[in-house]
Image 1 (cartoon, rainbow, N blue to C red):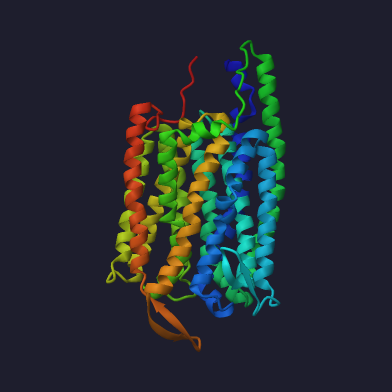
Image 2 (tube, rainbow, N blue to C red):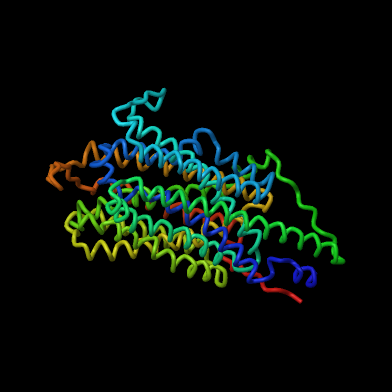
Length: 470
């Protein structure tokens, strides 16, 4: 068996980390696009004349097809049925398609004044609706790409530095978020149009498709090395049971999976939708200049770039995965409570809270995603990840729309003149209390997950790196 292990390509450190780097670049480009509009909320109001409700509607489109058409779940089934290569390349192409539609809608002037009426969705500006359609298509691609990346990491790193590898992949992806938050507004201002950062995303995603094509070659070599190792070994290769549609019910019947899925949606609902409005929070509450207000929210993903791999490495070597998630949820909750306090409004406090939020944001994912393979068999992983992402998308779809509606309905405090235009001023206390509520519920689920681990012996508190026995 030892000879067999030594001949598998993933046992080469350089090979498995090179594969990770290629996957991570594609996710970097996807995350850049996912958050590129967040710092542009003010420009969108002024340049495109969108209301906050329209901006919230557009932002919520990310989860439309994933949630209501179950495309994310279908993508997970395709991943388990047809593998990483086909699913990953298809997801990258879908991302490019959605981004192209979104760019066209926001960059064109021919849609000005036109409206679109659709059942259920109601009547909206044509520009808002088409941009939302492109964002929804992109959302399908990036979410399926995310579950594909997770399963690929399990394939290359299981029994090795799996949490560290997942943390590194998240770090590179978060770098995309950080750069989007800190650079999109300056780029848009310099070019004179809100669509320019989206064009940059489109170019990066096209490069990402080419990068994933290189990964496909490496993945084929890995499979070939496994076949060769099995043929050369005296051991009989394990007969891997194939994924069946009935496995979906096995996943849904797993209480540990549900705790992770609900913890995921609550945790991410307390962070990602917050980032969509964080730039405006910095301007409205902390008086930060609009030209660099996006830089402060950008501190959060920059923090995760360093901390997520660090905490992942701790999980690999020491364990305590459930405990790490609980601590992260506590930090997230505390930060939102402090953001909600009206008199804490100095920009230095905002900087400190964003750094602290980055630490909390690193703790939970560093342990959450590597814990899934301990609960779910390999053959079901793609579907299990996709179902978690599907539950998460309910939050990513609904919470931004909720916050946009709350801002318009309850949080307008007056008006002021900016650049010759009269704009509304806002109090963000209610939205921050909503985010606090999500954090509190995430803490409860963290403790429930820890109790379930004690009952079922999943090993969430045990290290990921397995010591080789001779």
